[in-house]
Every structure is written in C-alpha cells, then in structure tokens.
Image (cartoon, rainbow, N blue to C red; front, side, top):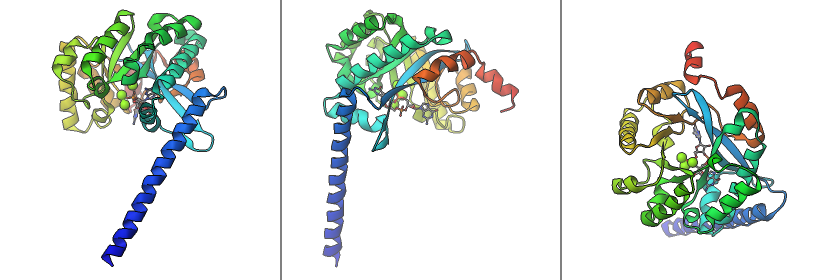
Amino acid sequence: EDAKSQANYLQIYKQSLEEKYLRKLEILNELKNALNGEDTDLAMFYQPKYHIQRTRVEKMEALIRWHHKKLGFISPELFIPLAEQAGLINQLTNWVIRRVTFDISHWHGQATDLQVAVNLSVHDVVNPKLQRVILTALKEFKVAQNKLAFEITESDLMDDPQTAIEQLKLLRSAGFELAIDDFGTGYSSLAYLKSMPVSELKVDKSFVLNLATQKEDQTIVKSIFSLARNFNLQLVAEGVEDLATLELLAQWGCDWIQGYYISKPMPADAVSGWMNEYSKQNWTKKCEESGL
Ligand code: C2E
Ligand code: MG
Ligand code: MG
Ligand code: MG
C-alpha cells in the first residue's frame, strides 16, 4: 500500500514538474513573440516617487506589464527571471529603454520635468552595448540625458561586485543617476557599498509594508537609514501603503517614498493628467486634515 501511494505521489510530482516546465517554455516563446512583434502586448507603467520634504512628485519608476491575450496577466517577478535565464533580457531591456524614452517624449504639462528610473538586470549592466542603446534612444526621441535614471538590485550587484562597479561607473560618468534597489535583502558587504557609484538607496518593501506595527522592521529601517546617511545616499522607501508609515519615514529623515499610498503604477497616457492634478498635493498634510 505504501509503495503504491509513493509511486502515485512520484507520478503526480513528475507531472507537475513537466507542466511547470512546459508553461515556462510557453511563456518564453510568447515573450519572444511579444518582443519581436509590431503589435506587442507588453506595456510600461509608471509609479510616482514623492519627495517628502519638497512635498511633490519629481520622479517616476518604470515597471513593465504584460497582459497576454490567452495567458492573462503575467508578473514581471515571473518573466524577468525567465528572460534572464534564456538570454532574452538584453533584448527586453532594449525594448524597455526605447519605450520609456518614447513615453517621456510624449508627456506634457508638469510631467515634462519628470526623471524616470528604469530597472536593470545584472546582465544589462555588464552588456557592453547598453550605453549605445540608451544614447541612441535618447537621441532618436530627443530626450535629455538627465531624464533617465537606473535601478539595480542589491543582490544583482553582489553577484560580481567588482565588474558591476566598473560598469556602473561608466553609466555614472555619462551622467545617469543610479539607485540600489531592494536594499536589505542582498547581503551587501559594506566595503563594496563604499565604492558603489550610486546616489540613491531603496529600502526593500518587505521592511516597509508593515513598518507602522513591526518593531523589528523599524529597527532595520532605522539602521539602513543611518548607514545610508554616512555614505551620503538619498533614501527611498518603496511599498508605503499608509499615512502612519509615511509619518515614521518622514520623522527618520527619509527623502523619497513610493507606494500605493501615493499611487499604484499607471499607464503612460495617464501620467500627464496625474501629474497636473496630484504632483503638488501635500500627502502628509492632506490626510491629517481629512482625519485619516
Ligand atoms: P522593484 O523594482 O523593486 O519594484 C517594486 C515593486 O513593488 C513593483 O512590482 C511595484 O508595483 C510594487 N509596489 C509598489 N508600491 C507598492 C505598495 O505600496 N505595495 C505593494 N505591495 N507593492 C508595491 P512589480 O511591478 O510587480 O515589479 C516587480 C519586480 O520586477 C520589480 O521590483 C523589478 O525587480 C522587476 N521589474 C519590473 N519591471 C521591470 C523592467 O522593466 N525591467 C527589469 N529588469 N525588471 C523589472
Ligand atoms: Mg525598482
Ligand atoms: Mg525594489
Ligand atoms: Mg523588487
């Protein structure tokens, strides 16, 4: 009886592995089509970065979205790692950079002053063609260099810190602002942090989502802040979902916040309208007044 149920179990296990594998292959195949086709179902969304002291939105982060006709919504947390494994990420990043630059060139009103951060994978950072791709897109769509910035996760940087630092220095000396993303999850060596040519440090949202109630998260965030300040880095907190969290972060000297509390990521054609209406709202005060 035992042997039989074990065999059954193995059979089901094997089936589910095969299904997962096939699904991955299908997604990769569809991603290739999406990157090559004219009528792509990939899109870029934009999430505001709000400056707490200046009480306004001055930057956005570009986040890729994929609503597949048959497969439905596919998260970047799923397809970005697949693209990396399959050697598709450089092509995907090229698409992202061109689309973001195109979108920037079509914004108007308050939105024309925005700086937009693009997420890079470690495979992009070490790609010798990256600079060329960026500069070509900026030129083609007549977008100023300081309108683009880049984010790279701490764990990606720690893959091969020496090489990453060399490549990031090239981007930095070309004038692009750089941020370390998802900080606190990637086991940075402090020695490397010292030599990273970055100006922003983004605290991972896992420490921010429950900040108002979790004492441990408060301790972690406060120590990340004092570390960052010693390295002269701008502080960004992602995943701010409520006023209580915003107030704590403000009190601890955080510079920028991002999160559903200000806005979810929005489509490119919503950005100008959103900026004209909301970019100068004082989110701290507004909510104090409404008693939230
Ligand atoms: P990330 O760069 O750390 O982006 C932050 C993620 O947190 C985004 O998820 C964003 O939608 C989500 N988020 C923002 N505010 C809140 C909030 O208040 N609460 C909660 N629960 N979540 C919030 P998303 O868009 O699913 O992206 C996930 C990750 O996929 C990104 O993490 C980034 O690493 C990667 N990614 C997204 N777009 C791109 C891209 O164009 N290129 C590359 N290479 N990676 C990308
Ligand atoms: Mg990011
Ligand atoms: Mg992040
Ligand atoms: Mg992340």
